[in-house]
Image (cartoon, rainbow, N blue to C red; front, top):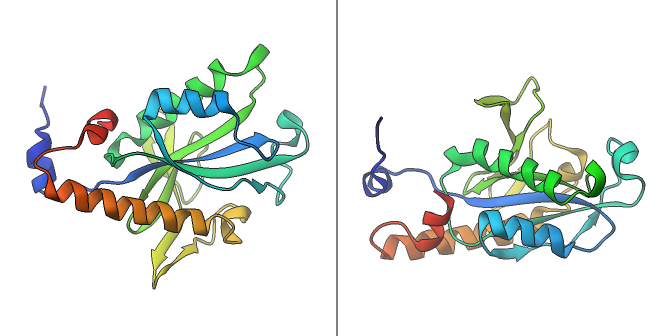
Length: 196
């Protein structure tokens, strides 16, 4: 079995990212039990964005009812994007653990933001999603260029209307700050070790 040497990978320019979650909830407030469960798996939240009405589709209406809201959050430190499959499986566990009587109280789309794009993990296939393994696909929703985020043509409607872009800009700035801090240290940060 090959063991990965983190210091060599960092020196070789391994990509690093912020773990982000797009969380769908019933109502406009972040639920403490959802935040606790996410922090137990991914470490402290370093940004929690405004909740926005999820009003472009009724896809989740049968499961969640009316009045859905979605917000974006990120976690402290940087992580390796190759762990997206594991993160997606962890969020499925969270959704099951905190759901009374098997009915979900949230939908967590976990993914990452790197300097160039937002990628979310999905258990659903699609013509423009890339299969990563263990039933998980990568879905690039927005790209960054010319000082702003631009939605991909296939992005969810609420990502197309730019309502989350202010949050993504803040998270991108946090990523840049984390990467600058990391570059002044030798080896992975304690937060990065959390996400390895």
